[in-house]
Length: 231
Image 1 (cartoon, helix red, strand yellow):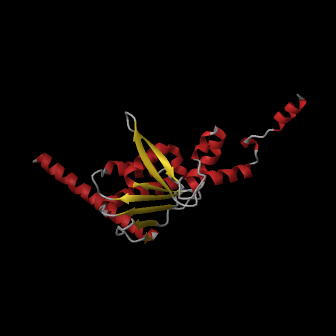
Image 2 (cartoon, helix red, strand yellow):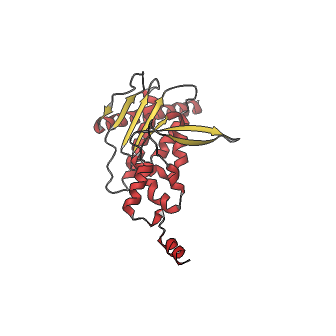
Image 3 (cartoon, helix red, strand yellow):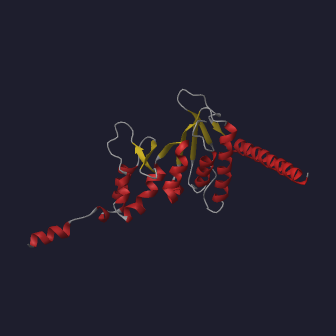
């Protein structure tokens, strides 16, 4: 009986471990050495979307469900899951992904958007919604955009809105610098939609030019509408 009491008192749970070994376990279970590709899946009457981490070939352990063990593990490890991994996600489901992870967007540091193309499911609203949500990704350090036939100007309008919103958001967070380079890669067997990298100064110049064009177009439409109204 006494031995049972001693054994029960000597038991140690995961949360009793010191912070350093716990963080090491989090790193082993939650951080992938390569990119994590996100896949959406629909089921049920309301077509709820779920996202699965597709682990690289040969990877035996990757357990994001570790965050569900307790509130403490969730609080400790969420930032590592979203901040230490590089996520690759199709543009077509980007808005659903950013919506589903909610406030965890602020932890994302590396994001690659793949399959940027103009197809039957092209939805300007979904893309704009995704970039509006990414404004809260204030820790984002690298954004890679890969695609094929999507009109560059159309997609860059989203990027312009996002970049300006992100810049404004970062004014209120000390120590954070603007995203310096936005990379535009190419999909497999496709041509790049943009040069592989754009220096910050050049990108900002294109942003200003794009905004000037947008404002000019809006002014022309407003004047035309007013002229038609008074005719």
